[in-house]
Length: 106
Length: 119
Image (cartoon, rainbow over all chains, first blue to last red; front, side, top):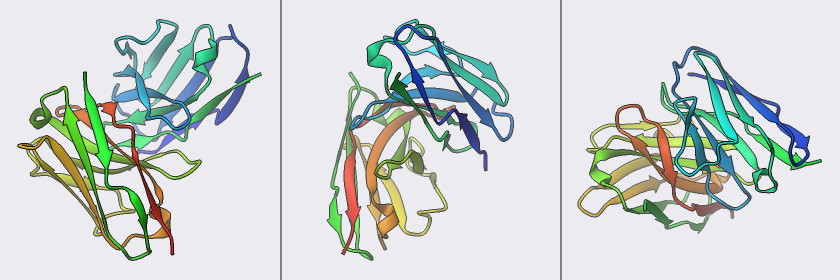
């Protein structure tokens, strides 16, 4: 089974900050990785697919990079509506989610 | 607009059964693989099962294998999850989501339905 290690598990940041979240796969997954945002009581929303493609309608301050085993989600300038929990998901072999990163207000 | 609407959740005793449904609209249901994902209270996301577009291939997480059965009715645009021998650790919000059939990239999600297993 492929394991996904996501870090950090939580972070505190201010509006306007640049935020970076990382996911590491236990084996190579090509670019079969998505990033999701989840707010309390809501379903996850896809932000990035194929590691670096921006989902339609998602602000351009969100970006993804990486391939193989190391992946990054970057929020270039954190906005109030971005405070949420973020998950990576590999879909090369079945599905495995990262443990999540809760982004909180500093 | 893609819509996925789960139903069938509720309170059930340990050892009991429940059947979840997910009604789909806004996309060609019969061409998409589908998945069930769950989230225990205060916890992260956990994949539960996958079914291919035709319904002939199914896959399960080890935690539910032998107890849960996924199926679909493409004529009704509906996905199902039959859950038997339920345990307290199955308590979670259950989401359905669609996946592209070639790469299994998970796209749109339903709002979820809560399953509580307790005596």
